[in-house]
Amino acid sequence: VFAGETTFVKGVVAMDGLPPDDRVEICFAGRSNVGKSSLINALTGRKGLARASNTPGRTQEINFFTLADFYIVDLPGYGFANAPVAVVERWQALMKNYLSGRANLRRAFLLIDARHGTKPVDDEIMGLLDRAAVPFQAVLTKVDKLKRGDLDRALERTRATLAQHPAAFPELVLTSSEKGEGIADLRAIIAGID
Ligand code: GTP
Ligand code: MG
Image (cartoon, rainbow, N blue to C red):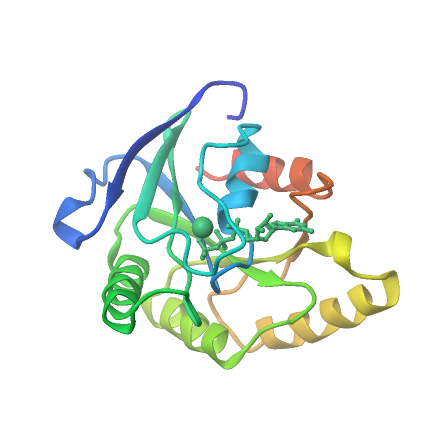
């Protein structure tokens, strides 16, 4: 899957702008600044493909990329964002509508900052995915910032949270877009989706 070229298709600001749902789609969701765009760049090996930045609320549209015969989708974050409230509310409503209403969405990767663990706003999104019956898989991000012991504790806590969600895969992926850790594992998981 990752051998070919990844290309940007479009940025979507409303549900009626979504491309046709005629192929397998996966998406990356998570709180603002958790590392969604960086992870897409690491997975595809293209640094500037999805725009990443230190400002929470960088991604404000639903960005579609093609990867072989898949769409991969970079979502705006949820939770705090450095943007006007009205704007944030609009894109967060779009993100939730997308997550609960996209017929060809095979799996959502739900990113969790390994340092912070899941927050109430993550629980809300996991509940939404449960109700919409969208299978989701948790990915701990920025593991390069933690010591082994802290990472083990984060893993344990996140596993306990996932156990409460029927749509969650029990398997968790640990990643660092910065150091490359877990990227090959995640590529293999994505290549196995059909
Ligand atoms: P929004 O689009 O605002 O929701 O953010 P995002 O989830 O797309 O996060 P983004 O990829 O823009 O990354 C946010 C910040 O975290 C950037 O400064 C990244 O460089 C940094 N970052 C992302 N992944 C990692 C990682 O694995 N390790 C470290 N140390 N920093 C990371
Ligand atoms: Mg982003």
